Every structure is written in structure tokens, then in C-alpha cells.
Length: 142
Image 1 (cartoon, rainbow, N blue to C red):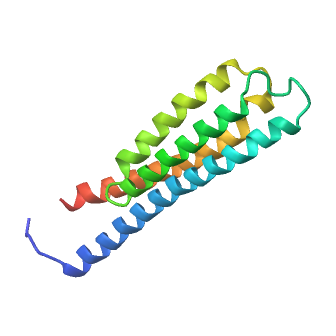
Image 2: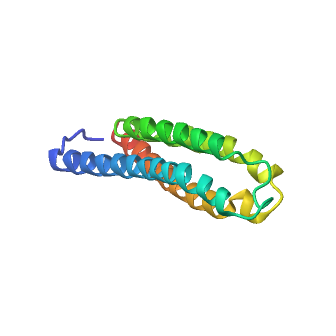
């Protein structure tokens, strides 16, 4: 096999890898924004809802956990600008771990937050797809 250096192809591949890094970082930044919205919206909804609509949910704890989750997603988004696969995998594992108690123990569809978990999962899976494309392109150019 002839080893020929194509600078145009290398530049094009680097632009594509940079695009995938931005997509992954954007997905994680979107997850951060969703966590911030959840930190303010869900406690407000709990206060407005009739009693026992959200049994066992403490609005203050939800706000604190959601803000900490947002901070983690923000840090992972910064990391994704350099190498997107690892932070996207970490975000998915973390989100799955914190979502399982709600899915397993909350009694109703609304209390489980299935819709918001589906949306968040979709966002994080899009980031993972970008990380996988970036990794594949990096491996093929090596």
C-alpha cells in the first residue's frame, strides 16, 4: 500500500471530527439545561399539584440534585469538546443510575417522569452517537 499524505482529506476529516465534538458537547449542554429547568419547574409543580400526586418527593432535594446534575453535565460538555465518547458514556451511565429509583419505586406515570426521561435519554444517546462517530473517524485516520 502506498503511503500518500492528502492534506485536503486530513483537513476535511478534522473538520468532521470537530463537528462531532461540538454535537456531543451540545447534547451534554442541552442535558445541563434540562436539569436546570427541572430544578425549578418540578418543585413548583409539586407545590401546585393536589396532595399525593407526587408522594415522597421533596421539592428542596429535587432542586439540589437537579442543580448538581446540571453542573456535572456542564463539566462533561466541556470535556466533550476534547474527546466526546468518554463523557457521553459517563453521562448515560450516571443518568441511568439516578433515573432507576424513580422508574422502579414511583407509583404513577406522572411521578415516574417517563416523558422527561425519554427526552433526556434521546439527547444523551445523540451525544453518544456523535462520540462514536468521532472515535471511529479518529481510529480510521490513525
